[in-house]
Length: 203
Image 1 (tube, rainbow, N blue to C red):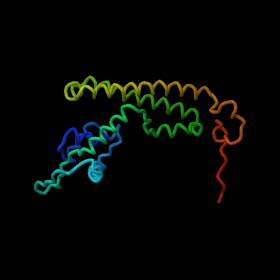
Image 2 (cartoon, helix red, strand yellow):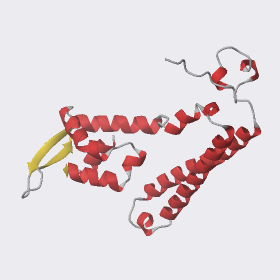
Image 3 (cartoon, one colour):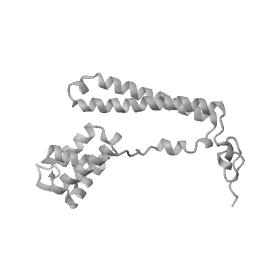
Image 4 (cartoon, rainbow, N blue to C red):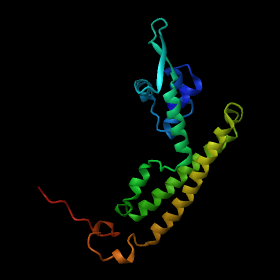
């Protein structure tokens, strides 16, 4: 959607300018748009009939540049994707969630320390975002909704800071990782805090 939307916004536009604009938004960090995949995505969208190549030009020894614009089919696809993301909730992929699902594999002291470290890193990010909100770069050079988006990221980070601190305290308190019904049930040996894991069979 990001690439379709930018071509629609800037058309007719070179792939180089699409890439530069996405990087200026830091979209590789929050939209999973990798800089190295942008030209491939433009070609694929063209093959699918969502974009059309309107010109290819070469200046001197520079690589040839293709100019793109959105087709009617691409316009419909962008509108569909845009409204689907506005009106629906989709959970972002978070590697930390995968790690946290194996909480009992971490020593309690280390898990609590890691959670507090995560909270400190998030505090630093919030401080950076607040500085951005007060900067001329945001106030004078970006659309107003960019600052609203930074406010959203800041609010999410602040909520996670509170969560990290609460969970660190619970981990340190020694609360069981299993509900009472599962404490002595078969099939949960690896999730009992402090229980020795069986060694792998020797070859």
